[in-house]
Image 1 (cartoon, one colour):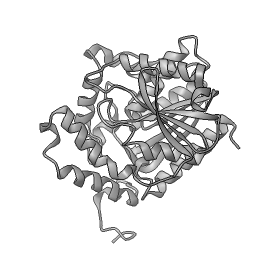
Image 2 (cartoon, helix red, strand yellow):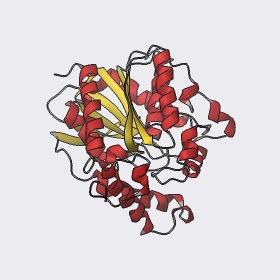
Image 3 (cartoon, helix red, strand yellow):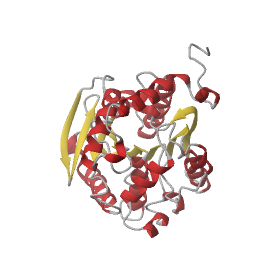
Image 4 (cartoon, one colour):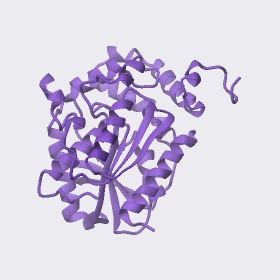
Length: 322
């Protein structure tokens, strides 16, 4: 026994012990359904949502959470108290293909409660029905609308940040790049990037180390997800698909939560270095022992809670929230 856990080979690789139940819970939940690759896309989405549902339960009770339509996109606005409040526009993960406002509802409420800010969760169109760059066009338009008319939704439009996890972090960074290159370059005061997919070339060492998916995300799954998002192979090196290849100058200060035992680890570390080289202030970093999606395990994981607290402190500083 080690710290109450049987000798699990994953512990020898540095896995945080509290995350064993998260990994095994998700893996076991998928085993109750037919093999995932044999299902059509609509059924895959239902299964993926059902597997994630228990991890979105519980958590903070807020002043209000309301569904709205902003531009062409459905959104859910979480508000911890009277406004107008600064807002984090948050884009859920799921490989551009899966998940929703519901699967990430608790995570968004955690940000609202811990940072004392509004969180605008966005229901962007999924791949492969919608592909790059359509999502970016819609998301950039949404940010512009909030920057112009935020008061209508109880938002302070002068204090906005954008963030997301996994594919959502990719979309958040690419949206920030899109706005930087337009007349809304100063619309955002922060970027929150959680274990993002930033390099469609999939050539890093961490892809080799964790290719088998034992820590929830594998190389073959990422290949499928990237292929769902792009229209043609040449787009893998488009800097708005693979932001690691972009000119990062002029982006707002950034917080990066980097998962340790994750195929995406090394591209996140490389992006952090590239942001710093571009003179962008970067907070956060690698969380030893963590895995992809670990923030969703906050109900059982002290490591996830610490990361969320770190992010909340940073958000309060960016938004000047006392």
